[in-house]
Length: 180
Image (cartoon, rainbow, N blue to C red; front, side, top):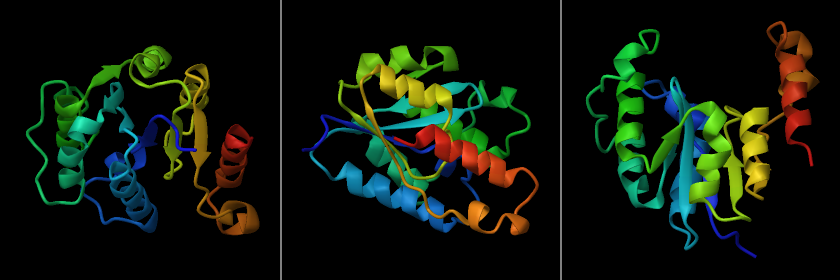
């Protein structure tokens, strides 16, 4: 049975705009394209320098056209100019997200924002591992939503000696957060 709505986390894809797409980025974009074509409404969420942004189904085609490069990112807004450590393309992308958003909030208000816009029983999809925090998972649970996480591989656990220091422990914590 299909959920009444879907919420796709695009945090990783947004954080990497302007760079060469990795396999994970391409998977996240494929999910966006596929779920947008389904009859159930799709929403997208991204964590940005200034909180969370929720994009409604009505603006997903505009967002997709920017993510695929069919349309350029717009101008940097005033708020993005306050994030000097972000590169220029990311500041423009986050500015466009704010222009396209249905709602946005500070992290502490995430549950309330999801509750306002998404029906109970929605499914949260995370295919990029970014933003898999207790905050987002708790907010999804509070809206009686379900969570679906795509684990691409377990290389940090299988080959810890090839990882940067701390990566296996962070990956283990991530898996513990998302287990059923």
